[in-house]
Image (cartoon, rainbow, N blue to C red):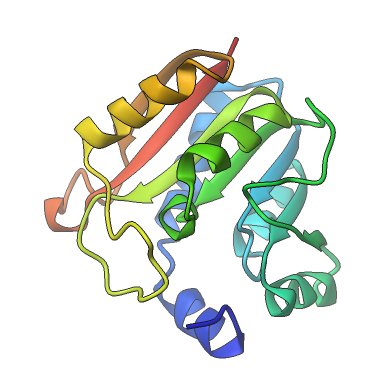
Length: 187
């Protein structure tokens, strides 16, 4: 499957918009001085628009030419780029965010390392903790022990001060739809 118009129509219908509020709450509480945000895997720009409406300066990247084109039609700052090789200097943004991106990557470790490289303060990632029907997932779902192991491995090569693994809002009321929020604080 490719990341084309048909995929993004399906994705836009199925995206969990409650996670946008989760992300905003974390930004305000854990990264109160962050203003410049990079959304990695921005899709057609829904989360970007939400964060912009709350005063953030947001840039997006996606590997899909279609998705970036849709962002540009909305007047959003977006460019085509791989999450595993971001085209920005170190510390270009205050914070990086991804919502349901890591499960699409061949190398999620490299994706997290790149997210941290271009961020001054840290990174927020949301990943599925439940079985998912998305045929583009390389990793169908994550478990808390797997995420802990993954982050420990990354900490040997990336400047991780600490991290938290939380449940998103929906997971707190419906365990069959578990999604994890990973908050990484950069050292």
